[in-house]
Amino acid sequence: MNNINRYNGLYFLMFLAMISWAIAWTNAKIVGEYLSFYNLIFFRFLFGFISLLPFLIYNKKNLPSLKTYKYIIIPSILFFIYNIAFFKGTYFGEAGRGAILVTTLNPLFTLMIISFIRKKIIFKEVLGIIVGLFGGLIIMDVFKYGFDIIFDIKNIYFLICAFTWGVMTVFIDLAQKKINPYIFISLCYFFTMVISWFFTDFRLIDLSLLDFRFYFNFFLVSIAAMSFGTSVYMYSTSIIGPIKASVFIFSVPFLAMGTSFIFLNEIFSLNTMIGGVISLIAIYIVNK
Image 1 (cartoon, rainbow, N blue to C red):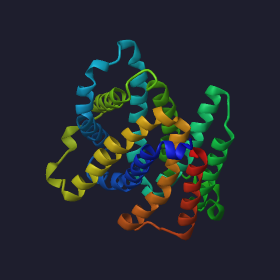
Image 2: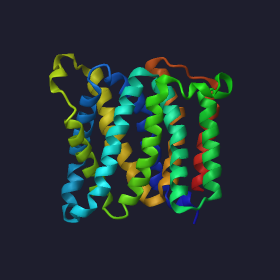
Image 3: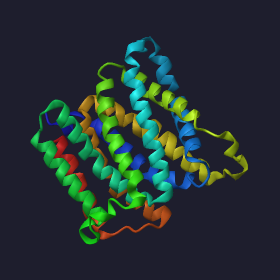
């Protein structure tokens, strides 16, 4: 059976997840104006964990043994590192450009790591990654401004995001073979919250400065993008595999540039549209 028909419902959820991720880059830049990076990470994972607590309670009989917690701690540390780079990158750089750089390089890193582990390369996956990478480079306008734009000092945090997420995707796939996906996702959020707590300074929080603009964007970056978007991605990784799941990320640049154009007045050009269509073709190639 064609994979696209087989996983219709899951693929639909994945596209919704990618929309929530695309918007999150703009949301992150906005909430970064209100709270410190570490405070944002703590509250993001606190609310993420609370939103998934019903799943954890419902599946409490499937709690993992102590020896399997290493599969949870490592992704949690990677989550923490990723979010530091995510919030710092969107604060110091352009949210739209950052989304393009991260989501273009991430599937490439994932493919390289998976290929190294299983020592086998599937042609359609490589072809899809190459097509998606090409689409991302077009969106970034690399062929006009050169590859130096990728390694600009403002993009260092985004490079960290891309590599960290690639490694994390592989760990997520391995972990969910041993741990119930709902339990795994909930506990990852919990331990990331605990890790970030040690870096949090609540004295820096002035509730009087937090307005509707903050709460609205924080809801989208935490509940929509993480509780829903990241959870769907993590669950899908265990079903369709890390490479197929990561290729969906190629759809994020086009969507992220659109939201950045609407809310942050960042440039949305013809090459963004062309690159976005090419990225969608890459998703089809890998998942057909």
